[in-house]
Length: 369
Image (cartoon, rainbow, N blue to C red; front, side, top):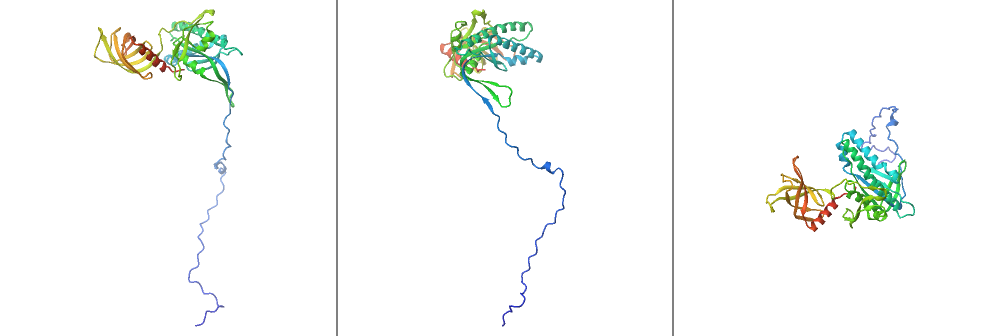
């Protein structure tokens, strides 16, 4: 059997040759749209640097007065818009109008209150600023008394302002954001909180001063004995005194508040029983303590009780962690016009411990403004 010739043509392969790949039909050409460039995404904007804030603080001793208008929002809301605007403008004008004469600088006015600085003389002990602040505070209360006399004749609600004055070291500066045309005053320090707490404890028309203020104005002002109170945020009691008058200027704070203490909202469940002929009746009168002061409370009752009647009360004081039991009180005011009976009571038979715990509770409920 002869071998295949090497010179002959190669025999065709038994496997079929691969077919050329299938190509998709060519897409018809489309002319570019004139708006194509507008549809393309814009290139990312370069990152902007955050606005710079310029703040330089200096430590200095300041006299800070804080004045708060009592129930400002409620009174303004109770009046027609035009009357509310007039009442507000006249009230603010009275507070602001006396500042220039006493060298006071308004730091800010927010809603119901103002903060005023009384700059001290360079190199002094701060007595100059303190004395001007004390004089302004008494003059302000006298001006507000005259304004209230006018308000009563015009059948407008009176305005009452509580004032607190503190002296001490603070960090003082101006906050200046880049591009801003107005600088914002900055005050930091314990003296700021102290002034706010004194203002919060002040009754309507009252001026309270710190011990540091008293040490710098006692030679020219009539000031009461110190009172120790428990204030939020303080581990030690806060000493405060009431500024009564500046005799050398013939200025005296007019008495506008006849209550003997602060009153704070309480909303405390209370067990209440009537007392007749020295005997405590077994019937329980539905009762809630609506507000409380050092010497009495406002009770919301589920039924009527006699005017000048005696009650036995029991309630808990949560902040003081004290359970008040066998507290006797006499009804001194009574309002039966609404759906609930409101009775103002004055505590009659109490203990020294009860009196101290009620003070702690009331003072702990006071929020600085």
